[in-house]
Image (cartoon, rainbow, N blue to C red; front, side, top):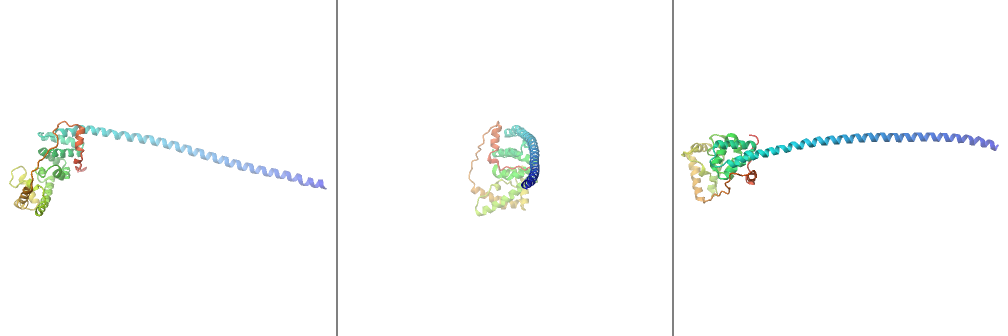
Length: 285
């Protein structure tokens, strides 16, 4: 009985447990983890990084640097020629035709430095030469003259620098408007005992025979809605008397050296001085 029971239980349990546990666990775990991780990571990272960085840097840097350096050298060479020629040759005795050509060439190169050069000419007390420059500006770049007229009057020159401009031109009319405003201010300052400008002494009289004087006086009186006689009695005569009473002798000193062969560095040092920083240039006129 015991052997029959032993043979009945043991041979049947051993073969049933071994084949069921081993084949089910091993093939399911190994192929799923190894095959999915390796092919997904390697091909995605390598081809994206390398081709994008190299071609984008090389063509963008090279063409942007080369053309920016060349025009600066050409502009400096031009300034050495025409603007320097105007700076050195604009002296007393120069013919208007030659001065006109010098101004034209220099203005085509650098309008702002040409305007500074004109201010420097007047700053040297070259009155007749500066009047020729103003006449050229009125004919070729009138808006530039109007834009800087107050600076030319108060800082570098005088009121009578623009009396000889063509009557009824934009520049001449603008000069008369400035004079009308200044005469009104001077008359009020005279009544209160304050300082006045020298404008009344510089306005031409109605009987003057000099060029443009009679017409300028008549145009100024008309703009102030006065007759020439009333302009003289109300403004000019009392202001001139007031100026002569307060006037003191002044010695005008010219600190500029007479030189005809400035170098480019010497010229740019003068024109780049802060004394001429107020000069402005109208880009579109």
